[in-house]
Amino acid sequence: MSLQEVITYPNPILRKKSEVVEEVNDDLKQLVEDMTETMYASHGIGLAAIQIGVLKRVIVVNVGEGRVVLINPVIDEAEGETRMEEGCLCLPGVMVEVTRHENISVSGLNETGEAVTIHANGLLARALQHEIDHLEGTLIVDKVS
Ligand code: CO
Image (cartoon, rainbow, N blue to C red; front, side, top):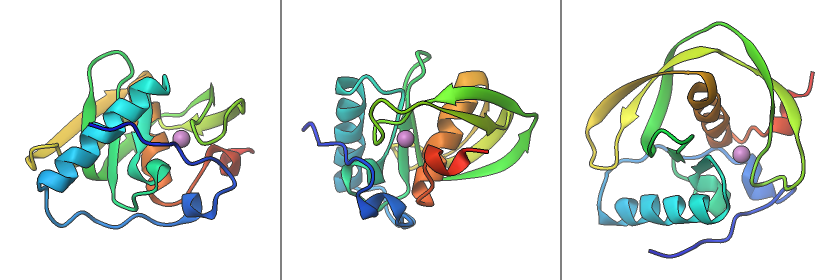
């Protein structure tokens, strides 16, 4: 495993759209481990691959309920609305109030390449939506209303 540097705003890489992962191979598993180590070392609750400069659709999240890894995540269902202050490892010291869906259903692949569906609410749902936004080049500063 190796700790990676988190890219910070306004680095233009953060605005790029991440690419679909075609194969869950050893390199991808290494990426997931590097992301996990970097997230924990940064005291974050989520990280998208783009935040360490890798333009692949991979996210890791841990809101205190165990690690969730999603490759090529897609939000299938979303309902409700909740508003809360959010930070981002790419924007040190910045807090923005962001409206998110309260409940979501997300599908994708886990770190072993199996198809999974996660039903999430509360903080986990928020963190997943935040990280999935990164895959589209969207940051919390775009969410100011
Ligand atoms: Co972020």
